Amino acid sequence: MTQKNVLLSQPKILIIEDHRATLDAIKMIFEFEGYMTMNLSNAIDLHIKVAAFQPDIILIDILLGMTDGLAICTELKLSAHGSIPSLLMS
Image (spheres, helix red, strand yellow):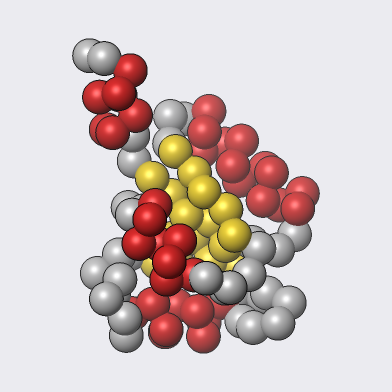
């Protein structure tokens, strides 16, 4: 399998987390297991980034600074990205 095929076959996880230490730990675990990750610390440009990255699942911190994870999850479910599974973390 070529390197390009390996990258295309890696499951992709979008992590929305505003606490840097928590984000680093989550990223390290998933990347060690072979997942490709992208992180956001807030919901700014969320839909643009979701469309560009096309994650297989979205992990959302339930307590974010300016908004809460439940509102982000609800917004995603009502959008064109509604079929992407989301998981709230606390």
